[in-house]
Length: 164
Image (cartoon, rainbow, N blue to C red; front, side):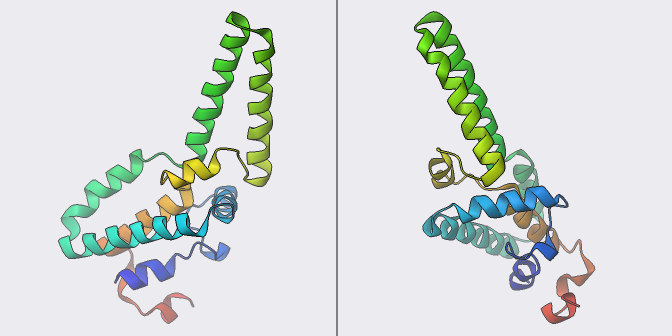
């Protein structure tokens, strides 16, 4: 069952986007492309381990995990909050300490533009190493949990039938 759930929702196949938002799927792929292989492997193995645990425990553990996923912050949200907090701190320090610190919000704005355009952000390696996942990675786990719970009629079908 786990193998079916994970094979149905590959992270590299745009035709099977589980987010429903094309740009979100692309953003997740760009972030994964800028993430160290070891970090990606650790994130993916964590999902697999949790799914195996939920498969053993049964349906009773799925709903609480789905609620946790609803509260989980994705990379975009973390970067947005971090950028806003840093920019506001730069404005306050520029006013209270030294006017040269007004450059901080400009640097943050440039980094946010680079993230929106290319998926690059100076703190992205740190954020990803902390285990923060993309929205697509979170959706992938949500989808697999729902498949485990039996929400989809294809969950017991062989993968080759699902691909048709």
